Image (cartoon, rainbow, N blue to C red; front, side, top):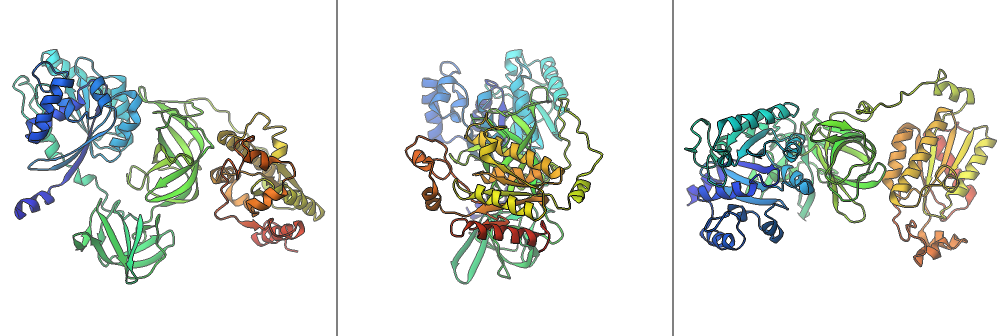
Length: 632
């Protein structure tokens, strides 16, 4: 028994999915594979016989193998797969984790979820129907998610008389489409899932096919070389301290090899140490390979926490706050640029926003199309900005370090999945298939205007709760700067809503658009050489981050007017807070809508406890310290 278990543990693991259009026979194929391979337990087989008589679609007295994986009542009633069905099984040569994914377009997001961890995809095509739009959709997602091995199983060959001509025609059609995809290993197998032809055993009805049956191919396909064993990436997901003598960093090894005694660098701090031990439930290891889940201890006490990454010296991932990604949208409410989300990546979570939607992809033609938003199940390319630098590798280099999910801040639901590209917004070509206007440059550079005015242009962005004192500070600073010989102008949120933003409400999307318009105006003022003092509640960190990226981080100073909610409410002489508490005013920051204080503002303005002149003196002193104003 010990020898058997040891042999079983040494088997490698293949994660694969089945996908394709509706009624192509995915669930039937998996059921037949498990049945013919003798992997269905007796009690499951007995239940299958009863379920086939009650819910089956295979005919009287026949087993409906799809019922082995279609477990939901709605799936059995409609004869379709709705959710992802996972199955674990093992043969004499390999262990498998299978994800049977839905074929209907409505559940494309479920298919993308199942494919996200797969090494191989089995794409089914109905021989009588040929390559359908959903076949192309799933194939594109498979390619997008970096699955390198694809088996195209041309199913229902019994319905076309096991015709080699039909099989070759389907293969040619799919191969022509697949030329535009990144699929390095493509294999075709003619099968009949209902009859078991070429599933586990070679079919006698198709002597013209000389290849191996499906299970044999799954047992022998080589996937271990797909792992990245060069670039060490160990994202820390949790720090464990059972007692004062042990500090362990827990996580799943994304890539590379962990060895005891190796020197590592902890990012983002940059501190170095050596690996003291690699701990697992079964004891310590000398080395670990991906995707091992381990606990690492270091020889030194470093500042390492959730979101940190251990890497090799001289081999670090990229660190960016703005980047490009392909996004699969998974929510009923569409993706629109500017709306704040939470971005979860490699164990860490940070506020984020899609600053620009470059285009969406027509997955049937692979053409780029202009888009202002992404709807459910649509795929597009976007520029994303985060509130803190993200440590990542491009998705093509590391699936674990190049993938992220977007989370709705209010419902905590996953709304999108992204794959990071090997470009940044600064170097990316934003032009999609549509014709965009060409920017024209003035013959007078911004530096010359700033020199003429004798000042350094920048934007001071004042944020805080309503009645926190933002506008009072803004207009007093404008007056002081004018008296000192500077050219400064206040952009006040209330004034903008009387003019350029009169068409906007206070919803999340409209708030983001209001901030975008203000940032565009501040950027133009900066080109003119002016100092802009922006006074906006701007309750979401992601909106302020988007403004920083648009204006330019080098010319953006965030100042938080720190006044407690009770102080702001006591100052309110207009009754807005009272109306918000009764529900008369909806989406009021601090009461019926959230306000997110800046985590790391350049300036904290103590408007809740100091008078106006003191607050302005604090701001001016800090601006001089940062080099934006002349020393006194």
